[in-house]
Image 1: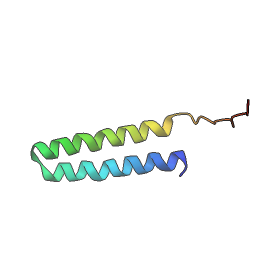
Image 2: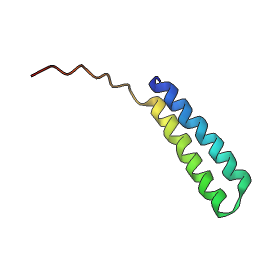
Image 3: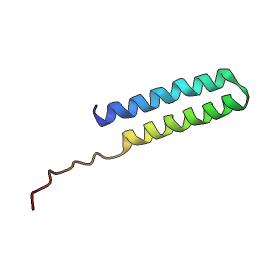
Image 4: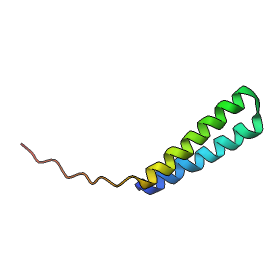
Length: 60
């Protein structure tokens, strides 16, 4: 997967988990909602992170 695709997957799963938490309610729902929102935030922040290109290691 490309880096941007991974960010979208993380954010998308966060939306699903947050919606489950929203409709579930109670303490479990609040926990799932917070976890989902955190995943959405991390997925979006990862989209703005600059890509790091690794160079192949040389044999020493």
